[in-house]
Length: 151
Image 1 (cartoon, rainbow, N blue to C red):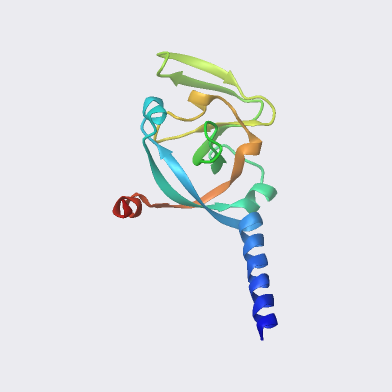
Image 2: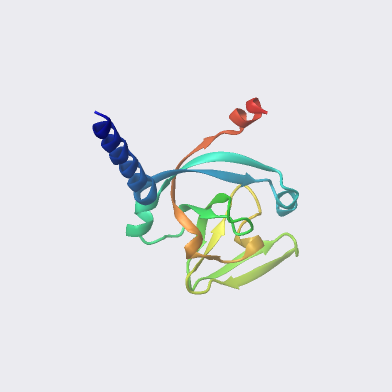
């Protein structure tokens, strides 16, 4: 009896491992504040994001895809952004910190990311290596109200 329960538990664990490693996984992402200054101060909100890892392996990235990456500034955190440029593209954007237009080249093996909600994206930290991409964002759940009730 114990052996059967043990084998069932091991099979469930292996199935869960395969699903979260290669198919879908939940990730707690930080939604950094409205600009880079607030990001440096550490104020952030959180969202639970469901990530499709299989799509990353099968489909090429396209401009406009919503993806989840490891944070460039803190590798223990995750962020979601939209792809605005692929390798070999020239990106034209307005830099509010310098109050001028800039043009950047996206080198091979990198992508240019953009955030609609804030300034903390590739305009701030430059092109992002493809190795930091976790997968495609499927859905987002705001968990700030849960975190505020526990504190």
